[in-house]
Image 1 (cartoon, rainbow, N blue to C red):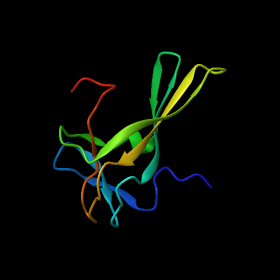
Image 2: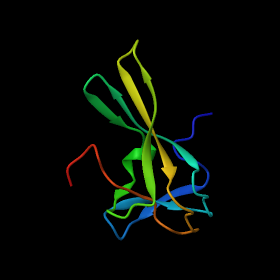
Image 3: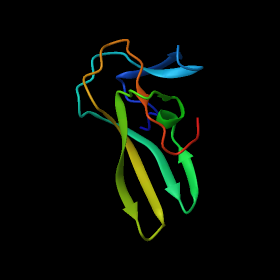
Image 4: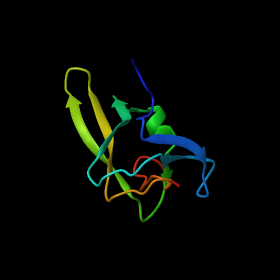
Length: 100
């Protein structure tokens, strides 16, 4: 069954901007939280996970390229915790696809 967010995350009001992703429990450094973006040709598509993460210069997560499909001219990125994240803490990412 498809779930747009991992069980360890929720969406709620952010102090950074609008809605954001928050840890419902502690998340260990190095945890792969799932796919955030797919690039097919020149078009970037955000998943629900990628759509709610806010930017921070001192981010606690990073996008990691998962795989590239030569057949479909596609790339995929996942969200990985850069450090331990505490329960209730907002997950953030340093934007690289979009201007802020």
